[in-house]
Structure formats: C-alpha cells, structure tokens
Length: 413
Ligand SMILES: [Zn+2]
Image (cartoon, rainbow, N blue to C red; front, side, top):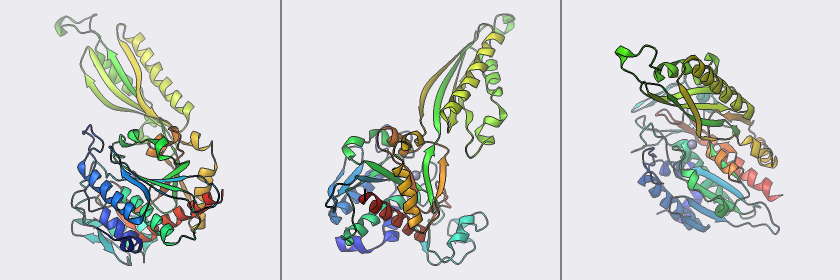
C-alpha cells in the first residue's frame, strides 16, 4: 500500500506501470458487471489510493464503478467537472501478466522487445517521440494504455491539484468505469448520482486528439421468410430465403461498405447471417455521422427489400431496429463551452488540437444522451488493442496539463 507522500510524488509513469500489471481484460460473454474479477481488483486499488489522497466519498459500487470527489477551493460556485476513464482492456488480446518496459530517451529506430518488435517505419508517431520516454509491454501482451493511461493521468492530475492548493478549482468528480470494451458497463452508471455538470473521458490516442463526434448507429435485424418445399417437386412452389438474402446483400452499394469507406463516410454492413430455405436472419449495421444520412441508408435497404418481395412472390422481408446510438455532436452543440474549453486547454498546453470524428460509439456518446455532455481527450497512447501498443510519457504529461488547464478554465465560470 502506497503512502500519501509516495502517491503525490511518484509521477504518472509509475502510476501507469502499477495499474497495467493488473489483468482487467473484459469478457463479452459474461452477464455480470464487471465482467471479470481483475476489474474489481483495480477498482479496489484505485479507491484505496483515492482515500489515501484524502478525496471525499471514494467508493466502489456494486458494478465496480469507482467514484470520488475533490471539493472546490473557490469562494464562488462553479460548474462541477467530471473526469472519466475505463479500467478494462480489450477483448482480443491478452492483458494477463503485462510487464511494462520503460524505454528512457527513445533514440529512434525499431523498439525490440522480448516478444516482438515495434517497427519504426510502421509507426510514424514514433518519429514525433525521439528523445521522449516510451512505455511498451514485453511484446507478449497488450500494454493497456487503453485506458490505464487515462486512469493514471486523472490520478496524477488530482495529485497535482492536492499538492498545489493555490491552484483554483471547482468540485472535481472522478469515475473509473468497468466494461467499456464490451459497451455494456456504462449502461449501469448512475449519471445523476455522479453529480457532474460536464465531463471528459480521457480515452483518446495521440497528442492533441479530441473527439466530440461519433457515428449515429442503427443495428437492424432483417428476417427473410421463404417457402419450403421438397426439392424434387419445388418448381413454382419454393421461395428460397437464402437466394433472397444473397440478393439483398448484393444490392448494398459497393461504395457504401466499411471496407470501402473512411473518415466521414457512412456505411451499410451485413454483420451476421444464418438460416435455411424457410427463414434467414441477418444482422445489418447502419452507420452515418448525419441523421438523414442514416435514414437514407435505411431507405436503401427497405427499397431493396420491397423490390425483392415483388420479384419473389411469397417472400417476406421484415426489418426491425434492435439497437444503436447517436452522434454526441447534437448534444454537445447545446453547450458549446464544453468543446471550446477543451480546445483552449489543449492550445494552452502548447499543442495543436486534432479533432477526430469517431467511426464507432463511445461511452461519452451514451453519457451525453443520458444528460452528461462528455467529449473525449487524448491520453498519449498509440496502437490500442495490440501487442504493439505504446505510450509516450511526455504526451501523458501533456494530457495532465490539458486536464489542469480545463479545470482552471471552468473555475473561472
Ligand atoms: Zn478505451
């Protein structure tokens, strides 16, 4: 157990390297939240450290959300700012026995690890980090900078606020959340109880990155009903749902697929298919940054389905929406200060903001629609969800600076 003095003075790299050693890989199959025990272990550690630092109401709740509060030191009222990061690591790559390696004053070139090599030519961001300190795994596991870099930066930002009580700040609420990678954890978060007016996730990548926009998403279940018949005697009777399904998929415009789109382009994506002559079920994902773009894509699918029903009398195509999420930009536009201050805080740290539209969903989008506006800020980690993952200590320092700038900006409101 660390003492208060040690926590206050160890710095962000030491914190980060302690947190990544705990295996918090989440599990898509588990029904519980947290989906894995390691997340609870990290949650308890963070709660203990928050208590040692003297924060108020440091608790772990029944789902393993860690929350705590640093009281305002202002004479006047100011907005309550929330800082969030997730504790779990990606599903696809092992997070067990992570052995972080600190490469001091990176000199350029390939980073050779016991379990693999991070190649200079494949990592253009390494060139921007010559002379910086780089942290990697040993090459056999992911590193876990996604999102323990964010966790460590929030903890370190709190330490700096505590060490320097003359720094004006309103009430700061922190939350470390479970099961972000499965998308299920945040559904259990009590936004009201958290009590922040505005919040930021620290879950982005390279220096300067800021995300205030994400896809609108509609997840569709398409059910195609055919008519079965003995194959020897099928003429004029059988309507094969498999043929209808394959024609429906073939009708998706070639330029409107994940594999042919990028940046701000949306797509229609058949994700799963199963069935037989009588009935086929497909999962189809629609994505677009604009709402009417999403509607247009739904319309394309619906028109193809109608045409196929006419072409194959007796076939029936049902389309229903079974899930989705919305672009947080619509919500963030309601309070422009949330993004404006983030951009200003990045510039004040001497960094050029790099806005990025997320081609997916984010916890921040869900929070924004639950009433807590939450854009996403960079952490300084690179190659997330991979054994080649690395983090720059100097970029992590910049992320802390941005958080401190943000808190100072809101304190003046
Ligand atoms: Zn993440």
